[in-house]
Length: 510
Image (cartoon, rainbow, N blue to C red; front, side, top):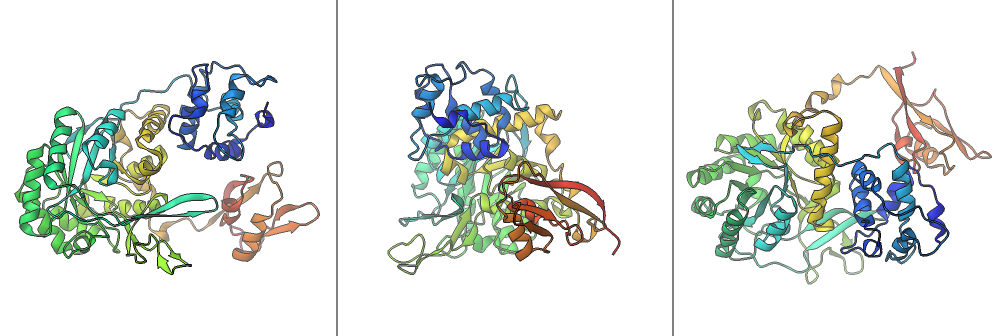
């Protein structure tokens, strides 16, 4: 029996332990279980913040708790784990979930349908225009797995020749994939082939939604492409005014930074179709609402944001070439992944509260990995969600936890429709000068959880207000309320969840 099976995990360590899972395809742990369980699915739900979905699966466990015998189902399941250091503590995770307050008896069937740009969608989750939606087979697989629609990879008259390699990542402290850099351009398949795939998708999946992303270089190309994808059966057209790594003039982000050009090309698209038009915005500017308003003036029905951010992820210090290196050279290109979510949310907010964009549907993307991420975009005004980078890491299967997590939230909080959630958090956002500056929330230290690492002391002394004192003999932090300003830096650096917010009180009179 693994000694790890006896470990009792807390809320912090159970998340850390689940994060060790490799998220295998055809997971060996599940294959080794003859009790009909799927431990890999349970852990995957936990990884994607769908803790209630993970706990609901624990409620139907058929295995008995692990005993001293090496051949128990749980022991076999952990023994099959292919991690090279030590197996994921599946039994301890199951035990935690079974004892947690999150335990539920069933996964709810909430109505996630929503109307976007006048089109009825079974749920708000779409693949965004990228490599994850670049041919018939890929899109069909995603639609069958539960995605409500796809934004087919951008098509144009231009057929690019791609470079190799074209991807790079950036990580931090053991997390290898915080940000993602991409040199890939628009669809490299012939236009005729892409149009044929779109037509087949709509014919074979008539209840699913097909958004065709297009990019032209001239007035005539924009109008021609609009007519072509309309004829192919698209439900909505997305104008790519924002790709940050195209290699020609009047393409991508160069267009999106020019409001007059955005308006003009949107009008050209409108000449070729009666379908709803989305204008996809670039974040490589200060005020996205300016070109967004121009797009609406040109005939756009909705706005999609954000596309990737112009970036250089790093330099290889041995070759002095930026990564990814293409024969020793590289270029500025698009950055995406979890790291860009705060930037995306800011732009979504700015457009949602802009008076000239009132009532304009928003499709949000940028760093969405979990149902919580998606819900944040919805709460700031999006009625449609697009995902790429998370699919590149974890596969189309993340749709299961996107749907389940949102369903649990809606059911438990009494929401009957996704529409009720759209923009619900906007009222909480105010200008900085309207924030409460007369009160303070001091941190609260839990002596039982504190492991005495001193991270709070280091951060407060070297980057704060020297309000955390260190009692060396006891290896315990002590708060100096006289110096503390309630910034909560200590709370955010604590690795064990031992620091939590206290009550909000009036600031002491100075």
